[in-house]
Image 1 (cartoon, helix red, strand yellow):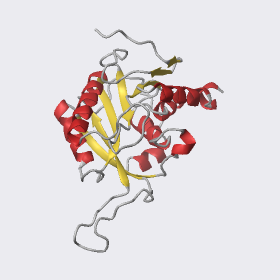
Image 2 (cartoon, one colour):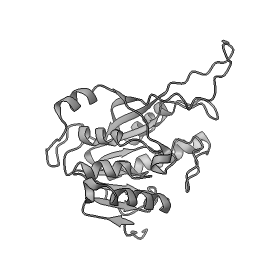
Image 3 (cartoon, rainbow, N blue to C red):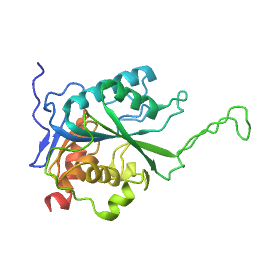
Image 4 (tube, rainbow, N blue to C red):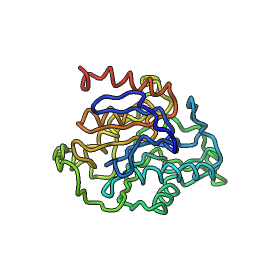
Length: 259
């Protein structure tokens, strides 16, 4: 059995694990209430310690492995919020959102809904296919998905039963089209950060105060920051030590946590 690694950083609410989600033994099965994560997109983003340009077949195998591990970590009434692309065209068109959703269902997850995140960012577009011609145009939607899945039962039966989502938040966020800006790579210091607003909404809408929230691809620690600020316990797994250091610095400099 793989020896359990001590946390890279730990407080009463936060645990940062410098580990591989596929190999870690530091998380107990059936101990997590909510997973909020944005896994690697396999679009050749220059991470420090992860290759993001593998074949699509290998990407699906990798995705199946981490989804299966998170399935084991979840409680029976646990949920997963997975921020992924709708599709991709770099290296060939692929229906990423549909494929990963199908993979998850085959593992045993049950499907609840899909939130469309209108990031409002079309500046990343670099390819048009056949310009102003029906020959071979590219159709690219400037949105991402947050696929909401659960393990066995959708209705939460455990936890504190204490929700902190306000009426207006509940009304707005249960509308499955979310519009807010993305996050600046330069500002955060990570090549693919998501904004605090994304995990904040997922945490408040899909978990109780005091629940345990996991991000298996922690990156700069945004999910942990949101979860801890909202009175949840937060676990982040990150294979790259440099990003663990970045996340720790963000936690230590957050006045809401330590100020």
